[in-house]
Image 1 (cartoon, rainbow over the protein chains, first blue to last red):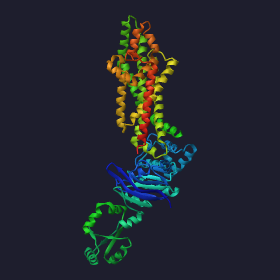
Image 2: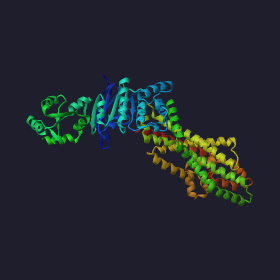
Image 3: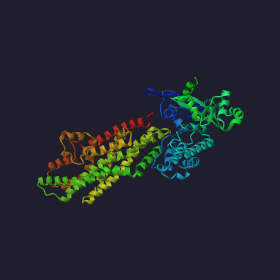
Amino acid sequence: MSSAIRIRDLVKRYGATTAVDGISLDVEEGCLYAFLGPNGAGKSTTINCICSLLSFDGGTIEVCGHAVGREDDAVRHAIGVVFQESVLDPILTVRENLATRAALYGIRGRAFASRLAEVAATTGIEEILDRRYGRLSGGQRRRADIARGLVHTPRVLFLDEPTTGLDPQTRARVWASVRTLQKSSGTTVFLTTHYMEEANHADFASIIDHGRIVASDTPASLRVAHSHDVLRLMTRDATALRTWLEARGTAYRERTGVFSLLVGSSLAALPLIREAEPLLSGFELVQGSMDDVFMSLTGRDIREDKEEES
Amino acid sequence: MKEVTALVRRNMRLFFRDRASVFFSLLSVLIIILLYTLFLAKMQVDGITSAILGAGMVPDAKAVRFFVDSWIMGGILATGTVTTSLGAIGILVDDRHRGAARDFQVSPVRRSQLVAGYLLSTFLVSLVMSTVAFVIAEGYIVLSGGELLDAASMLGAFGVLALCILAFSALMCFLATFMKTPGAFGSFSTVVGTLLGFFMGIYVPIGVLPASIQVFMKVLPFNSAAVLMRQQFMARPLAAVFAGVPAPVSAGYEEFYGITMSLGGKAVPTWAMLAFIGAFGAVFFLLAVFRLNRKIGSK
């Protein structure tokens, strides 16, 4: 598979601060790639560099084989960008907005009409085409933004924090339409988010902190490598369970009668549950989340844990 | 070029669909008209009347009114070329503030096309709004007993309008690139609107002001614009009011009211004023293109 985006040693400085500190990554064509990190980690800076909005101090970026900085025109034809903030014109209708933007790519008249029908269907905005953008709800606006990003059939679509500030239901709907368009048209999608759990929707995720990539893998592998499942045991006889666990040499934490144990994986919990079965009144297995992955890779929590262990 | 057309259409739509922006771009024109009818007109009428009495003639009240109305309306139309350009270029400030400029930048449209889009739409908006102001001005003159401009003067007036709009919209585009927020731009517009009345000798005739201030006004193109515009408006009222008044006396009043201009004791010819405004516009056009190029595409 060829790379839709190929970044090598990207560096971007703002005066004395280094916002992006040597990032390298490859995004496969047709995949949904999530770029995760807290606010200020360098996500938006990276996206702005890729989209030819920001010049950078070092490294190379290629989008669909075109070098950013030298072949910006080709890059701009290949990309669609959905910005974090609303950038369409509030007093124009959605249709007028899309017509103006499409014209910048040379799409007019009949070509525009047929393309408009397609993107409107993909993003579900047929009903609101003739309403003024400024009068739409947050979710409708977001979908119109995505339609704008798609209006010229880009090969790579960038979404900068597409779900920030939306309610959970709308977030889910935005995700659904992103997934649909990626699956149906084969568009490569590159998005940033600071909602860690959203990375589970992605094919591949990179976690960025302080301008560096700290981990890069499929969400499932990241969870396996950097988070633990937690097994919670409930019992009627706390003393017996405590004695049993201590005899077995298993570390646990007890809180309000519930014993929490870290287990490497879901399967590793099975023998334990089976052995302890006579003592149990119930159990619960909580899977490691992307939040845990992020914490364990970047947060202070992991370091505190280590100090406790040593 | 079709990209530019699309951008111009978009910019003009943004301006004309926002009723407030349309209204406010004409507001300074309307405020001056209001000030004039309430306070300033009587002062000028009295001034002219006593001048004619002083020359030993009997003033014709209707002609005096026609004179004063034409004087003020010529000046107002000149200010309008600046204030309506300013209203139109607000879209640029908005685009940069809201992030629409970034949206344009990730598209393959060339910066020169964006720049052309802003300059052209500003020019066209200003031309439309100035035409509206022209109709209001003529309506005012005729309703208060004056005469409509003859065809030649009307053509001349539109020529001056077009030149001034070209020059001043270039200047305003240049200045707008320094404004980061719509708030700052709004304050700037207010200041411009206020100062302009003085720079163009609208509130009071230039002859009333101290000599040093007069020189300052004359070296700026704004006063020349007002003088050129008044020349188109004042031919007939001048003849009517100063009929029979000795030429040196009437010439003195022409200069006093900013219908002619002299610098260092020498009369400045019309072509020189036109050339001055043209050159001024050309310089700021280049500066505006330079600044817009940098600001729209600031990496």
